[in-house]
Length: 311
Image (cartoon, rainbow, N blue to C red; front, side, top):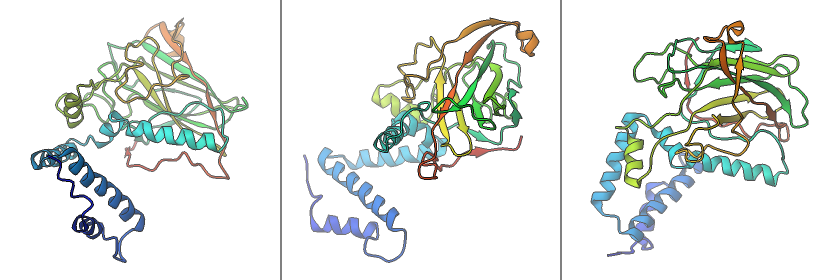
């Protein structure tokens, strides 16, 4: 039974009071957003005849989401982070900005403070019997192909168990294992010597997987490597590439896969001379092209709460 009381004066007055629309204190922008979101929730309760039991089930879920610390993971899994990227893509299109490496989601597992090295960084601090050696290398350029010296490339990825250092539930990884940062050389070159990652799944007992189960969805990601890339007079790039051949590339629960972000994996030898764990290794060449500032500003910078640590 749909009660349809949303448009009654007392309901609208309640929304006005709850979000302090007529008060002089508080943030006008925050009040505007809160009023819209609360209004949409009230309207949905009317339209879908959402019961009190269902409302309180939702409140209880939000409590669990907070306890589990998975709000950012859920944002990725429900497509919110992807939608923000889509809006930035459209903003670039309308501004006439073309070229550059495609952006894609940051995800919830970045940690600031990784050691910054010149040109090359070996980031496999911990031994990992389940992962073979991998070299990721390339150059950073502008959209015209000009190399960008002194650009900073930050990299982070999971181990062979699908866990990230600083977030590993087993506690087995050293701080900043499989995380690093490189300042590019005079020709824009960078290189990470690391191990082949695998994909990961949401914690099976966590709030995100609970919601995905109710939707009949899986919570798994293909193997991938994350990057931040920044350079003077250019916009910071947030992106990641997938590992070629992973069966979940186009079935990523976080919707991060994009054309142009699936580089080939090449078999190589000579890893012992590079200090790798084996002579045979895999190599991925991935070049980054950065776009210039917009009217002197970087409109790609996203301010969000991120973990940090001391190397």
